[in-house]
Length: 109
Image (tube, rainbow, N blue to C red):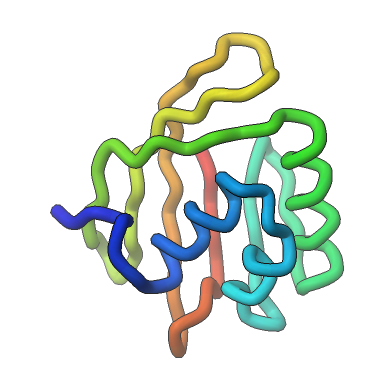
């Protein structure tokens, strides 16, 4: 198990998302990245930017990392997410597929 307080794309994503730094979030994704969240998919930088802005402004989420593990070529982060949404906080699973130091695929469930 590892901790996201270090460096790397996963730690950088959580830090940027928690401070709502959209530019820093976008710098972590590859140009052809895909995000799956709440039953929807967003592909490419423009679509993922819109998703990040929408989530940030609507829910104001803050992720507390509970656990991080490597499995099947992915980095799996379990996080407790608090924000302005019904049922807050909730525990969510973030499955990151990384390629060349960038997020290629992120699935949140």
